[in-house]
Length: 89
Image 1: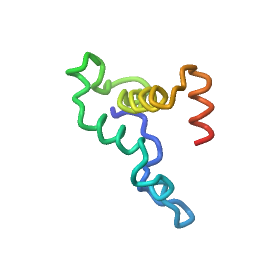
Image 2: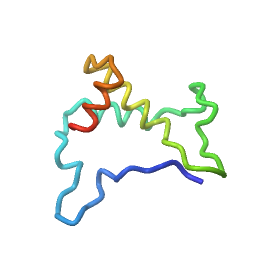
Image 3: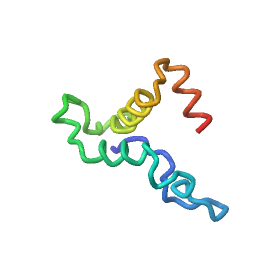
Image 4: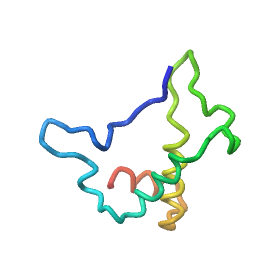
């Protein structure tokens, strides 16, 4: 079983809009994304970095790490504020 997948940034929608087009090429979230994708999560202590075979699929730990790094770099300390930023952006 794989992780819960969000909508792909390169995935087109009903209208000819791609989410990746809204993010500038020099935005910090692109650096965070490239950095985290290169990491081997099981080597960093994420013992459950492999998706389970049974039950509801989990969220990918990489997605949470990207979220926390983005919040840290933008001085967002509260989980509620980080959630609000996710909804807004």
